[in-house]
Length: 259
Ligand SMILES: [Zn+2]
Ligand SMILES: [Zn+2]
Image (cartoon, rainbow, N blue to C red):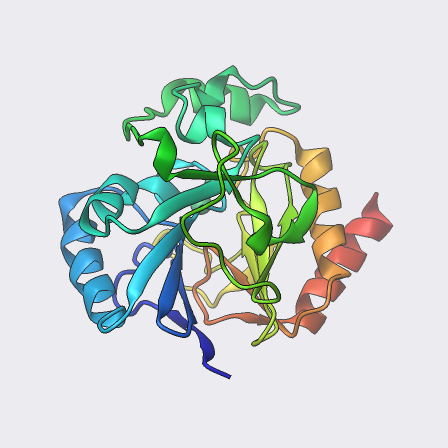
């Protein structure tokens, strides 16, 4: 079919995933990882290698937290044909300089943590490189230029679906890669190990306290995702390589009965 999805090897530590989606000779990168030279120096060569013979057309962002936008500017500079796509409701935080700490939260941990955490990655993109999705859900092929202009390139219809999951960040999106049945869950759930060194086996659970501003909505987001059509889920923070749908459904049912 000419489509695939691959994890970029060796650039995942400390466990924030980036995904590269292939569509013929065109590529879409989903998220841009932690900032820092250590990551950039591994990510850029890995991306150049993975897209060899083709073109990186789009950097599609789940949301704008620092562990997801860290190398966005470096990737955008290295790959000048790539436009950067985000949900319009995430744009003020991701690229507009508005602080996540200014969002009213339903939990004290978020209010405290977001005041303390620096937001030190500055994203400045010319408007012609920014694309927006604006619905609650739909096909990523519907992206529009930030000023309403048609995108230079859009993914083909039927490749990637998006669903807004706003409990963690106002314009956070999860994606379904239709050809492989993969659900990219962003930061709705995590599948990480316990203990100080995170050495215990990964366990599917909520994202850490203080990282989501609206926990009630976060629960609804998980329940909504569990009802979608997919076979394997990939939380952005995953110490394994995906989670079978049955485990997501079981977790969501637990949340539902606790509500
Ligand atoms: Zn996040
Ligand atoms: Zn994250």
